[in-house]
Structure formats: C-alpha cells, structure tokens
Length: 121
Image (cartoon, rainbow, N blue to C red; front, side):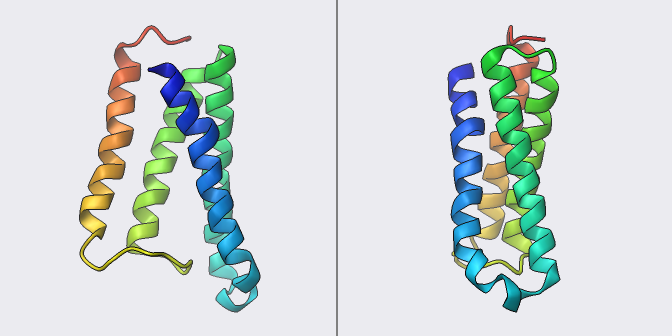
C-alpha cells in the first residue's frame, strides 16, 4: 500500500500540477497576480508531495510528517480549485460537493492508514 501512496505523491500530484501549469502559463499575464499566487500555492503543494513521496520511498526520518502535510495540502488545493479559482477548470456545475468530498475522503483514508501502518517514523 505504501508503494501506491508513493506513486500518488511522486507521480500524480506533480503531474497534475504540470498539466495545470501548461494550461495556465500562456495566459497567466491576463489572469493577474491572484492567478500567479494560486499557481504558486499549487506548486508548493506539489513540491511538498514530491518531498513526502521521496522521503517515504527512501525511508527518511521525517517521512510521515511530510506525507501527512502533503496529503492535507493536496486535499486543500483540490477543494480550493473546485470552489474558488481564477485558473481554468473543467468541473460541471453541481459536481463540486461530491468531488470535494472525494478529495477529503481520499486524504482522510490515507491519513488513517498511516496512523496504523508500520511506516518509517
């Protein structure tokens, strides 16, 4: 299971940010400074996910702390993107609540798993 979590943190989170960056970068000047700040926060969440995934993969001493922070940041960025964003999105009206619930449940399930797992401390 930890391998699946590593894949989520090392591949999915940074890849999601890279796709978002590619879609937004050409029009970033038109979107204003708030878009740049939002993109920076999303990049920070992806960086924390990358650091947490790598630390978990290599058995780093702060792995669980980084992974927990990455899961919370990932869920927060997902929910923020659904309800308030100046960046482009493809969410149908009415899908925000179920998708937000799914993002929170996903992070919560991993946090519960880590609480009882014999992960590196």
